[in-house]
Image 1 (spheres, rainbow over the protein chains, first blue to last red):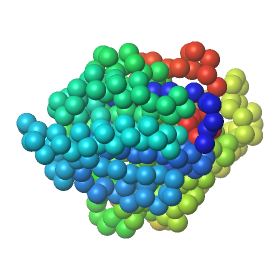
Image 2: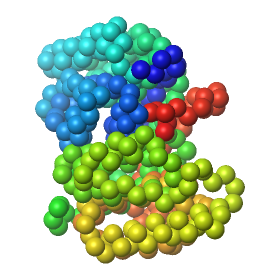
Image 3: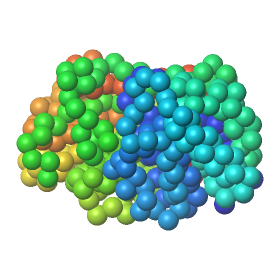
Image 4: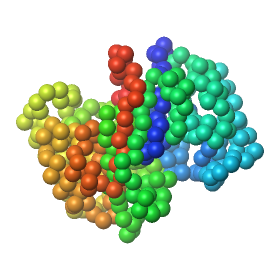
Length: 174
Length: 174
């Protein structure tokens, strides 16, 4: 839809809040401008409030390739299979080139948990069609991913009430 | 709507991308969970793509108190009047307590341009009803605002294609 405009690779990483929410905000902004958005979420599998909201937009497609509860230690075979399924889905989406904006939410975490490798993620970046804006989120972005990106923002936690024992709240954190 | 849950004060600051987009993402998430959201934007006055998208939600109210073009040097009398109008609007919204989540987008920039003072912003934080989650964005958050917040994230620019001379693109940056 955006013709021959060059799409960039944006990375949101760091230990602070706002990485996934920034990707959601960008998706909404793009959808508001009439662009087609694919929002792929790795690792996380919950039906968060934001997905309910994202699903209201005809031009945002949400796909989750995670599980109900977060990985705390070693990923299972099922975790790896789900991530591979998501990875193949993205390759296919790039081949079909039906989207203007593609979000790979928590892809850096998928690499961190070795669900796929940093080289695999770099391969996705290279396979991205010229016009696609690609958004990659998650802590622990590798140096290679940072080098391959056009824009990198580190969300740094300066202060967080979690440390005071607050539980994640519906509509705010999830 | 969220009863007696304590609302926190979140600040998104720093020179990196993703502050306003994170606030938009949070608004969408909250709206998806059925919360009432007030999204107040200072300084900026443009009809950005995200506002079109935010306006699709019955439970998100968007109010802008800025001007069409950004302040580059000294703010005008009109800039100051618009900001005061927005400030009073927020005080009134707090008194009526009809919102669960209140975003003060670019409020830190309003302080930076002396449209109102850091003390004025602290006053808003203190006036916030117990249950309201308050989100403040913009570069140059003052130390007082950071001290008054429960959660502070600094968006740090590590890499940015703007430095390569790319113009803001509809649906991506605006």
